[in-house]
Amino acid sequence: MEIFDISLEISEDMPTYRGKRERRPKIERIRTLLEGANETRLVLDTHTGTHMDAPLHMLPSDISIDRIPLSSCMGPAVVLEIRHRPVITEEDLKPFEPVLPEGHFVLLKTENSFSDLSREDFVYLSEGAAYFLVEKRLKGVGIDALGVERDQPGHPTHRILLENGLVVVEGLLLRDIAPGVYFFIALPLKIRGGDGAPARAMLIRM
Image (cartoon, rainbow, N blue to C red; front, side, top):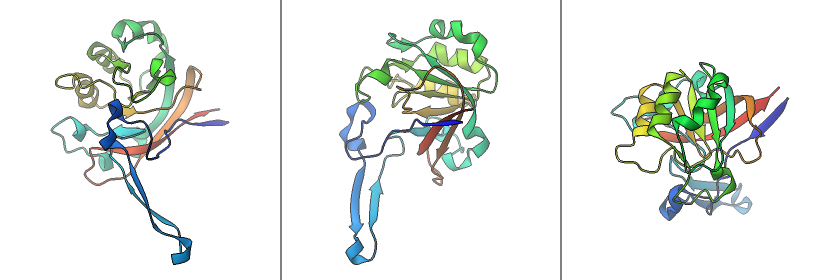
């Protein structure tokens, strides 16, 4: 069995969505061993780094991150590598249709895995591609970008996925992951009423 950690490391200089400095974490040492123990305070945006979106993030919903069942946060996954595309469209996904079983996650390894995650022109998922994935009755979608879309008006990609019950995980570290089938786990922090939460994500290959 092999376990692959596909989570971004949390640090004060970590990449953030479109390079926004205000989204960088603040990490402060508040006690030292001389005071009895090392203790640290962390201030972290719920959508910085590897994280899961709750329906509440984009919808008038009462489903916050703490209400997403753990069973929805894990399952078989297919890693697809789609390079040299500025946006992932339905046409890009159609050739993979035979390897997208119902109830699986699909994880998208794109040009983002080989570039600066803070860049503004990151590869994202189109509205049409989101509809295509919904039709496949997938469990969820993960991507190697810090957002599944680039602030499109009305956030259609987010809305399509979340309205149809798909789990959305952003900020996956997929550079060294080969395309194929794995078991995927992404466990978000249990934040009461949270619109999203940082998650520790991993892939397991038997």
